[in-house]
Image (cartoon, rainbow, N blue to C red; front, top):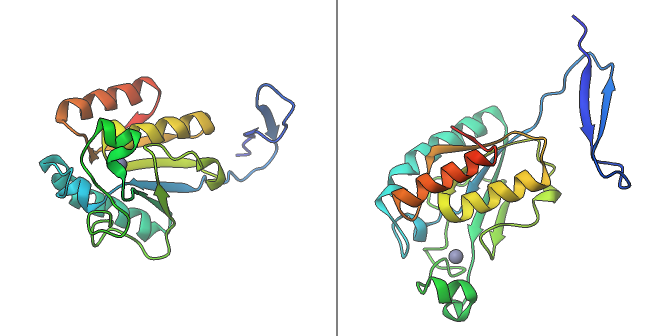
Length: 196
Ligand SMILES: [Zn+2]
């Protein structure tokens, strides 16, 4: 059966709204799937800011990464990154616990998770503002912490790519507390992030 194919173009800079184009392509292109692994670093698992909930998701995250890697789908890692003098930064004033100091063991991604050749984004704030350069088409986020960096990045991606599916697997995320984890999932759900 011939299927009409609709795609939404953001190419026209002069339009207030994206241009909706319906064309006659018979084959639907499959969107590129991207797994974004947020801050699965030792300090957030069992280091300076570790929690038992974070320890408990490591195996689920590992399985999820393997699924994407086995299919040949894209995987992007992020790494929270601070330097000496962290305690004098705005984040340090609110959270006076030195963590993820570049080069330290706590800064490193948990052993066994990183997939060789995948991009790894060093992130100096909760949300990364450069996602527009990654040409995202279908995104799933996992990692730490649900209530800070997962929610920040999910909402930035929703703002930059309003027409793509954005999913978060709750079994592969943990919050600062179980309550704030649940609250962040609820916030994301209200903002049309699909919670798995
Ligand atoms: Zn930090």
